[in-house]
Amino acid sequence: MSVPGMPLRILISGQHGQVSQALQQSLNGMGELVVLGRDRFDLSQPQSLRTQVRDIKPDLIINAAAHTAVDQAQSEPELALTINGVSPGVLAQEAEKLGIPLIHYSTDYVFDGSKETPWNESDIPNPLGVYGSSKLAGEQAIAAVGGQHLILRTSWVYSLVGHNFLLTMQRLLQEREKLTIVADQIGAPTWAGTIARSTRQLIERWQRGEQGAWGVYHLTASGETSWFGFAQAIGWQLIKQGKRCATLEPIPSSAYPTPATRPLNSRLDCSLLQREWGVSQPHWHDALLECLAQQR
View 1: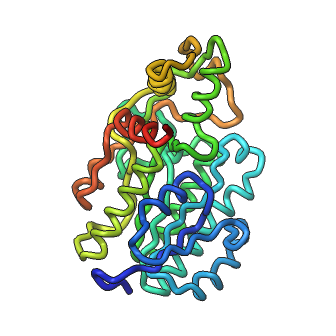
View 2: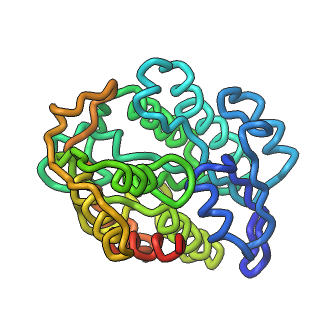
């Protein structure tokens, strides 16, 4: 059990992912970070996780690992469900036995994108594909256990590591003369650094006994744009640096078919997190500039 002011032993599942790496930076100084990658903490083998958690005896578990290949999940549903759906439930069970919180990240893909306004936590999920379904199963498995948990739904995550839209665009915009980008999917690009910083604030409030209710919350950058608008913002920064930049052309989702259907409206209303926990996020464009400032 956490004691205010005392260092924490924090178990982080996932080692090389965008959110995990951001957490390792943001949570530095909070105590002992036990960061376990797939070689030691394999979410495709749910029952093997129990022994690790019991041996480590953490004060807090953060599940930053997931099957995030949205299109690939369509062809390997059992694996996606095991990693994203079954293992989070196992972690919740072990956290409950230890009497400690679990922080778990979920996604805008639990919604079908049909709503005209931003989604809030009380809206009924209706995922369009395997990835969203598997992430929803993870949410439900954690909720079924109960206990102290935060399920943080985010969207359009990017950073300066791994495979993501920012790094792909930076490369393609400099390699090609013209790029066509989907313009009818709307959401909030969210920097992994923003997620990690907000996670630290949530942990600090819990340590001080100032936490809000446990449960599901939305955590994305504020503001909204399309993938086309996000690409434009990335391109403008390349131009400001004197680098070459392809011409961008907006297209509808129908012109860029993918194995998994994406929600057209991925906007998440994050006001509940602000009200309950006092944690708010920066505008997506400001966060992008902060992210890019670390690249130079």
